[in-house]
Image 1 (spheres, rainbow, N blue to C red):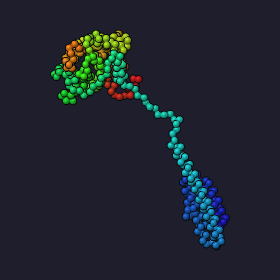
Image 2 (cartoon, rainbow, N blue to C red):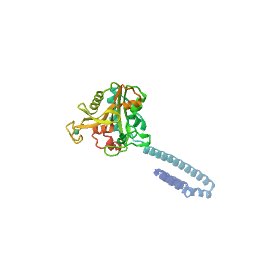
Image 3 (cartoon, rainbow, N blue to C red):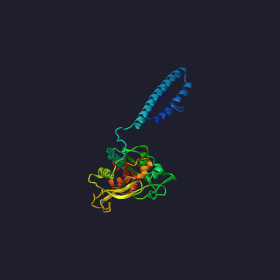
Image 4 (cartoon, protein in one colour):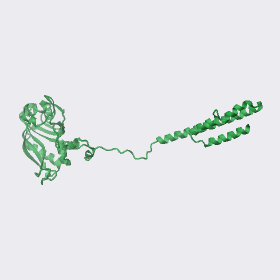
Length: 338
Ligand SMILES: [Zn+2]
């Protein structure tokens, strides 16, 4: 019996030494200590032995069992530790890997041009003022000398919210709001979104305007011309000239449309300027006395106003041919303007 136990122990320890994973360890446990194991068979047969041999064999079997159990426990905790280390290293971050590329955004061309316009007028003392996009008829039309039934209302395809409330069709209502609150001199730049029901290659239902207003005693048309020349040269380059053509706006008298030297051909004549050498960029004029009447300014006050489309300026500056591209949010288009 002793020999049998020794052989069994030797065999089991040899087998255990080859176990290197938890699955094999479980099978080994069943084989070495389970109900059908050789050890169990030996334990069952102890009863039939003589008292002396029974005692000796009992001690040996228990020794073998506890020794084996300890070896199994040691191996099991070693395997558990290995498994833990493996899962830690699988989850760990390799800090030497290159990072994910974050795409840097760029300023929208409308923002770039608007910032530029602000920077140009700031040294002249113009404050930036904003106003509501949903506007009362009085500020958008009536106070600007466009009474109901005035044909000029048809010039602007207005979005009506109801009879007397509109989406503003220009930034000019900000003039009225400012002059109602402030005494002259007034020198403001009013940028913002405006809305007109129109959509094609050169019109979108929403676009941006910036308007300038200078009101004081003794403001003359020549001041307006000088201011616009200063603006045009700062925006389009020192070589730029301007040309004023008589025009009509209800809120200014006299009114003019302003052309600048063609940005493409520099005045020689090309497709962009239709061979004239000039490109129209804005409308302007001396503030109409009726407008001053609506805001309660005295008779000796004069002033000028000018307004331009920001997208129009950006199209000329960056040679963009389709206005709609500004609002399609195509990153390939937008990231060109850094
Ligand atoms: Zn040209």
